[in-house]
Image (cartoon, rainbow, N blue to C red; front, side, top):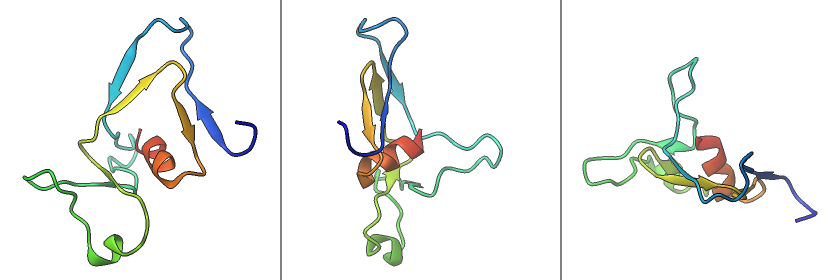
Length: 88
């Protein structure tokens, strides 16, 4: 991983097997989700406009569980991983 823009999560305790389960977080100042996080309906489907569906952008449902542990890497040049990082 010498090229690119990466974020690597490290634990100060080393590889002890701890896992953290996170949902997308709201901005504490605006109380809003990031633009990549979308609301879901009662069936668990993301609510997207036609423009959003055809945009080619990656969206994360507001109830997605993101698992973080020592060594978790986010490649910010990958749209999906960048959206997951922005969501948390």
